[in-house]
Amino acid sequence: MQNITGHEQHEEISARRTTRREVSPEHNMRRCIVSGDTALKQDMLRFVLSPDNIIVFDVLQKLPGRGLWVSADLANLTKAVEKNAFARAAKAKVTVPSDLITQTKTSLYQKLIENLCLSNRAGLLGAGADQCLDALRQNQGGIYVTASQSGSDTRERIESKNPDLPVIDYLSEEELGHIIGKPTLTHMIVKKGNLCLKGVHWHQLYQIFESKA
Image (cartoon, rainbow, N blue to C red; front, side, top):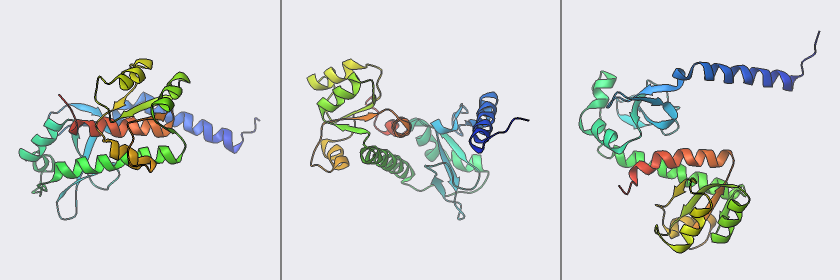
């Protein structure tokens, strides 16, 4: 009989869980209460009812209660607020805060900034154009963050090293500087890793509020 160590058993269980997730992706799919479109739940915005029947944005998607899901799209979120979609989906009389969209934006902004700060403390953030270029030369670049306008020479030089790199370009020099404890900063890069992947997640959700279209 083959002996299985605790570590091997843990890996075997993890593999079975991964297989189940791959076989049943619909488990992670949710339907938008506005458009009716379905998407992975991590790519959507989740809202729940408080005990007082107030609509609350669940930024971490962990609050108890039935989720009311909205596509990560500002137009759909606006319709959900203005067209009483939350009440219809909940089949109950609900209170929608007048600033729910602002609350949602603020929560996502805080998670994005928190992720960048964590990346800095973990030594996974390069500050300045030279460190951005160094990280890209070493194939370690995960997210490029810049306060420069599109078309600036330095930004174009950095982006040309990896045109497919996610770009965050809606934060100010002061906001970037605050992340590393300096007055201002124009260019930074988050290196590849789990924190980077989470950063991409928060960026994808938050950017609906910063679209330049």
